[in-house]
Length: 93
Length: 481
Image 1 (cartoon, rainbow over the protein chains, first blue to last red):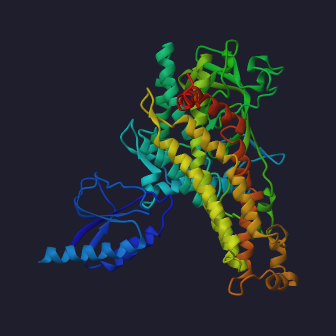
Image 2 (cartoon, rainbow over the protein chains, first blue to last red; image 1 turned 180 degrees about the horizontal axis):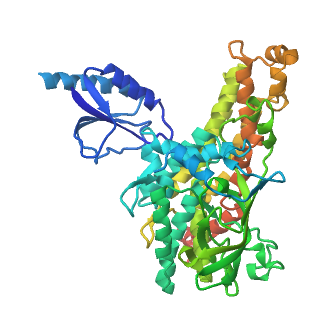
């Protein structure tokens, strides 16, 4: 199972509900990936960055992760889910 | 960092000498007039705990390297300055009110850089004193009130020339251990919800004003401090039997108090300026600059709520498809985002001070605040235009709850059939609250006068406008020698 973590932008003027997006991602990937908030010294397979808009381009380099997936809209949430499903499939293969 | 609950409990331990409506308030925390302002302040703690908001609400201390609340942070980059504005917009959106903690953050950043430069010029140890104070504020996540505005008496006279010497806060006695101060600070936002007060001079000073050139920090419940709570329009609606719909914003609010210092003792290690008159102006200018930047965030967040409420009122009345309604909502958004542009712009052009923290671009910050003295009034006017007269003529909640009148109100205040009448009443009361009720204090006159009245910004704009360079540009194009 992929070890994933999530980082939210600060949320000053989000164009979609980032909390709801996180719930959607976790539910869609239950059994495929585990999610937790980032901790120092922990390595993750995937960092999901949930930005509320296109304004802030932080990649949170201090979080140790192999892959960074960024969502800037409600539509991106589904791409994030698909990408993690693909990554998990490749990992199994 | 403190949790919201820890913060509220910490306020219960304060022994404030507070008066309101002619009586001493023994328990401000649970007082129904004051509590909404506490809830707004507490949101600065609550959101810092939420992973969805921590990227804006927290920062890394340059002193300890620990995660701290951004309200106690010394801005370390232009990115920090931008995040500050975004954090303020966020909190304005969540509270639709003044959340009060900005003034302390702005005061601390101003005094941090100023004390460094005062020490450099005068050989004093104010910066060391201040860093010691700041370290405690960051470690304990304290709430700090920034106190600048003196009551000023006769505006044509210098502090030391007033008929009553106490009309500007000043030193009345010096001892080996510290100083005693007397005077008053007006319009103190959030004082009742703060642990410490950071006092600064209110204007530039000259020789003869040495006793008035004083900056320091003391606990808000220090002996000799008396608070008199400022009343707001519609404030006693909070005390009525039915105090939900009619207050407009049940949970959040803001407050100001008149703070009297009557021989308050300040120990030496809490003094950050003491007689160096030529540096009073530096603290004033920097604090004002930071605070004028702040308004490009907080008022925008409040404006977001007002625009949303106005759009909802249109939806509920069935008028949202009318072209003029759409156009007015666009205009409100344009004005609101223009303020935000100014807040972001003055932050992005910030520069590093000698002390290491970042200062905003002062010209752009003053332009920001100058716009804030105007645009919220126009946004409020448009909100009242679209809300319609029913915003101020609808019956009270008590009549809505009274069986004798409930059905009439339910029937005749109905807008779109699918929308409950009560929901429409709530939105209209929110617009009333923000444009002429308790929250209007923060959204309108505070936009006018907070961080300095309009003329104060115009003076700064004139100083920073670089007019001679502009004349040279014109001369060159016009081919004038």
